[in-house]
Image (tube, rainbow, N blue to C red; front, side, top):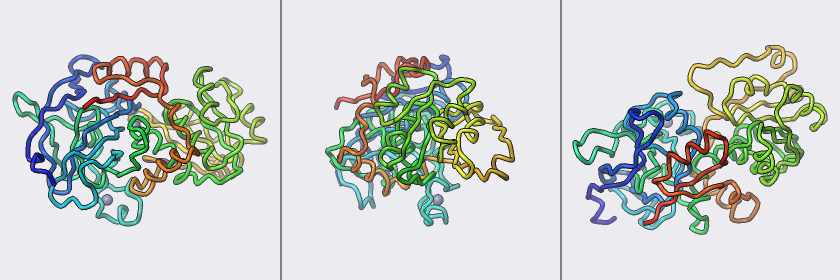
Length: 376
Ligand SMILES: [Zn+2]
Ligand SMILES: [Zn+2]
């Protein structure tokens, strides 16, 4: 434990106030010290992930002002009282879904299903925030209980997962959301086994992570689908064995490429039309996994006979069914062994001041993944 931990810090962060369209402002906020069971992490890398964009573009409502970002890795720099598993200097990946650790779901190994988690309220598990305005003291809120686009953050000990120091911070940050979600969708939700055929609709950050995890699981063939030729080329680099441009006869072409429909299909965009089509891409008895998050309140229509007669299964995926303390080190280990190539998933490394440009590039569909790097 360090003495310095009792200090409130001034921290630069990307803040969304909702008063200037979809723009974030880089501001200095006050960050209170870690309390019992909490740690302060010096963020070294924060991924620019799609669910932040839902907020900036008005599709999801969260408390404002919000410190944005939820995909991060860094170094523990202070620990609160009662912290036993982490020490200053540990390299950690942040888990944004901060379950209560006490309910039946948490005890049963399904922290992602915890109904007491406050992440969606942009609050730490105890219902509070450590952020405030440096000038007037009014509260600011960590998006998804993380608020990772900041030089430092405070999170519960259990949300900072220690990983091997050999994993570079930019790659490590992705494990906390896109890569972890993709890995978990394959390993935990769909439970893909070697030799199964797979199709992945959407070759963005999460889609490419799913493809890499499918390759790790031994799936074959792995067919990527996207509207962009450039993204399909990236999908092939990530491990896809085939690539198809979306189009009206997509289901037919997927059936051809997989010998009658894939064993398992993943939707990694969150678009209702592609979600609706997913069960048509799999064979009878196949699994369709919904990973992409649609805007609030949108309905997906599915032909009931595909389920009741053809025996297809729809599988939901929240945070890839991850148990972060178990799965983050597994993903890190697979990366270090060379079995899970993740370096190519990062298409741009930027500074905190370039955060708006990074989101604009995402909106134009140009970049797979930008990562904000912090120098300290
Ligand atoms: Zn719980
Ligand atoms: Zn994310």
